[in-house]
Image (cartoon, rainbow, N blue to C red):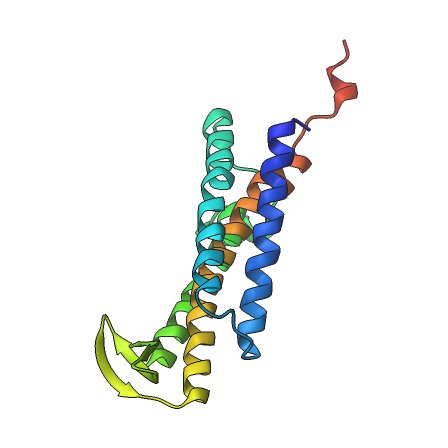
Length: 180
């Protein structure tokens, strides 16, 4: 395994673990408080660039998608030719997770995000005050906001980890077959 791939895969697995941890903690109301929250999410977002850059460049160079995904049985493909390719099924599953995550965020956000204005907890929309809220509501909206950001990062890290690290490892050719 080349050194660059090891570094990128370590970044991908770390980002995946960090975003999954934040996502799960947010469901239990455990929040990362500002300003640490903003810097941490920025690091997670910036780390996506080399991870995705490596993954995309690898498959632009080879011109094929990896085989590692849910397999659709051959008889199902024959009976139902409209089924998507097997690699598309896993991408669709991951995107459905992201869409559900976003829908839950929109439903639970009440049109704004948590903020502190003059020492009082408030729900705001781009600086416009919607209403003042209690500390418990503030915690709820913070957790909801963290769930959106970490769920977004989780989606991208899962795809990059599957296609850049796991599938790439599976599709490496057998070195014994290369010997003449």
